[in-house]
Length: 160
Image 1: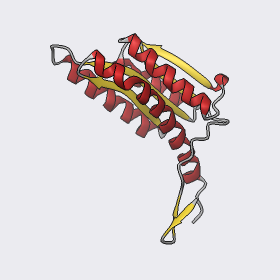
Image 2: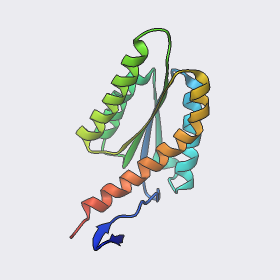
Image 3: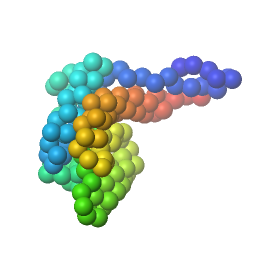
């Protein structure tokens, strides 16, 4: 904890020891999903999350991710959740529907269930953009999930 002009501020904390993390990954665009997952799980382990405390669930596509996240949140077994997938633009309006609705669904679950969810569903114009972003985005989702889980614990324990 640091102070900024006599204001309490919590430092980012990525400690994953004793954290349980659930991951929901879309099987659509599976090569991108696997790239996201590889970087994500490597970072979770680097930050101290044990293999036994990571659960991976796969779903057909990005629109199915929010329901799986909600079921995992309801189980009350996880400190944070992560959504992984790729929605790549095609020639139809379907891209916008899937990109927007999957993002809205993830946010709705996060706010309704009060559990941190790192959104790692890439929305790109083409495969090359997704490939270029998957490793960094996978790493970032792990960091976001852990930081937000630790922040929630700090906020819950706050005594001003």
